[in-house]
Length: 221
Ligand SMILES: [Zn+2]
Image (cartoon, rainbow, N blue to C red):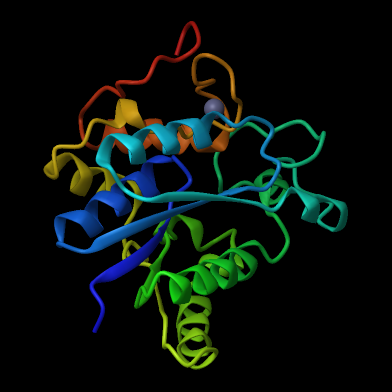
């Protein structure tokens, strides 16, 4: 059994917590981020700086070339980023087609390369309604296939699958994490917008924990 794990780390609050959870359990962590043509690279910059501070190996895979065949996502193309809660129909435009299957497949290849026994990613309870590739049945089947796809079995794990964003935050706070070192907003401006689905859920998670978010928000939020 290897004690090495690849953590898919976007720079956002869920994967930031996941990265630290793995470390807190004594696992050797290889962090993996994807540049899929996000409108901004701010979250990748945050990810780089956190990994360098923790002295964790960190790779960024550039998959921007996929943009040619991945139309329909407001995160990669020119559509306006929808405001409001993830559960609303409009948020479906934030879905990158087949995203997690592609990312987990690349991460599994990387896991074999660095002799990791598992890939962790930050799918959580709040994602289920809208993202098919964050559902438990998807994770179970990816896990099964990645265990047999190579001579070296690689497990796919989503440790936050049955947790809400508020519960994930509570775990991170218990670990003593400073969420000023995470970036969630879909808009890459100097301050977080407070209006996109990602900001709305983040602010709700802090409110649930009775705390103020240490990030700066644009005026009036
Ligand atoms: Zn935002």
